[in-house]
Image (cartoon, rainbow, N blue to C red; front, side, top):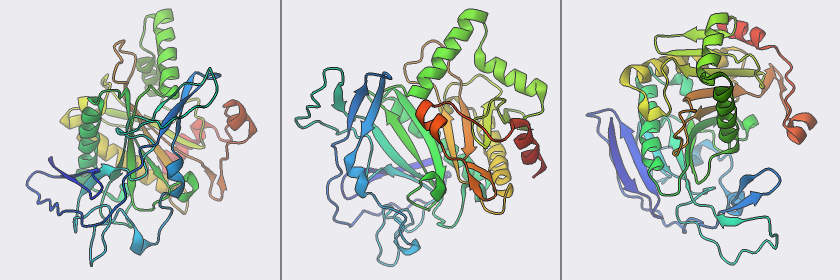
Length: 358
């Protein structure tokens, strides 16, 4: 993999990723841009024991521009975008409207609450452009292109994990207007958090309790049970298994686990990365064939926190959609939103069967 590093007009970092030997033009950014906001802050929720990120400047971020105004397409014909190059394979840059920033600072913030700590919203938010083709989907990539994205995720995970104050790196993709996507160009994001996220903390606590009670690894046992049962397995390869979890929360939900115990994306070897690219494309294409229109989805990598020294974490990807039928969406109603107690309308075994059939 070839990586080329440059800067945008406002100082944000931009990286191009390409196959070895591929030419990577990296022209300068000629735009005149205002400074990026560094006003993000964290506030401690004393009732849940969680950090909440606040970034009021994001209210004015770009929202579903026309195709000709897409900021993630290559620059061309005198129109300058976030990517100055006339073409690219994979491009990653710091978000212009970040929830977290390495330059975050507080200016006389006083919430007048003794139990609510306030800190600068330190961290980093990056945008990952999977392809320069505005009309493509991740599922349209070749295995070689998908593998390059995996390598880029690995590169960014390793580098961001080295930043002082970063505790967790999260690579993800949100696709579809129904999910809340604000740009239609195929892209994902990477968040480098200054804390361990609530979901990861909960998973670590459950895994720790399981180990203390049984002396066994929870992730190993979950994967083994799904493989033994077989009824929810969508596909299995030499290095990975994809299945609908037995207690799936979402109408369409698939978890993809490596068969070897791995903590982060950078730890995957070449064979595992190649194998994942092929399997992941297969699962995404099954998602898009389930109904007449492509499924809106969130694809979320779960990696070990930077400071995880207990060996409780296991790398895996959770892919899920809010579409519960061809013309209906799953809304987080009273029980889900108010109590985070999920109610699912479909059985995991039925979803698995349908995904296998398509």
